[in-house]
Length: 94
Length: 176
Image (tube, rainbow over all chains, first blue to last red; front, top):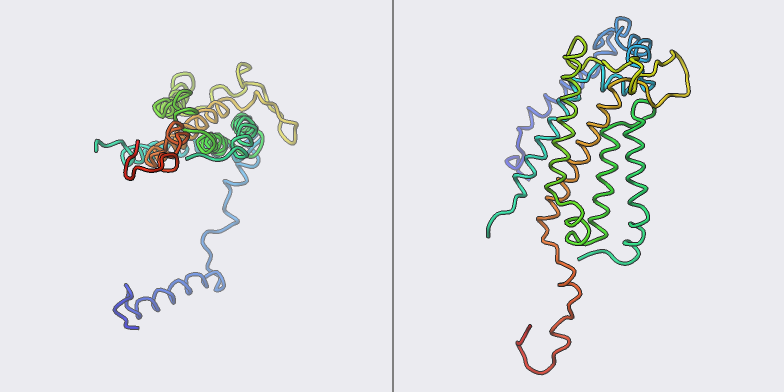
């Protein structure tokens, strides 16, 4: 087995694995990604979504009301994906 | 090329139930788990089951060709955008929940806390759920139909015609 078959050199792979391991070990050293004590939006959604939107389903309230613009983008992504499929599978004259 | 009698009979029984379940998921999206995306995908599963059970020419093309599903998909996206733009006109901003607690359609007031759930609450959220449901149903059906058209399915006449090689003995190389 020669090294020429692999896409990346072995040194870079080892370096990447070490880097990812270090990043994942950061919370053990006390460094976290964001402070849970300052995350106030989730409590806001839980307390206010029922009154503000009238929906019992908080997930639906977030997806279609608080983040409605995001859902519009998702629908557009689906639309473009279908356009791509329609282009790929269109009937061509033989 | 189609499935056998058992699959066809079971499909005839199950397809309406799949449609009803998908409609339930869409309609109750603001009360229970589910919503437009999930319900639309479930309804599109029913369309796929129809394609598995029956010939495309018999089952789908007479009922609704692929062109209709393209229109359905575009109509769903347009309904979403129009509902959002109506918030701009009636209320204050794009995607404003202008139907909520208005007393009209989907405008019943909702109590804070645990309640049984009222279908006619949540303002524009059910409308957007229906829009997304229609869009996802149309989109996945179009994808399924276009991919199915690429397979080159045989028609019922070709399948039910007797094999010429078995019936005709004698002259070699002669085929109808």
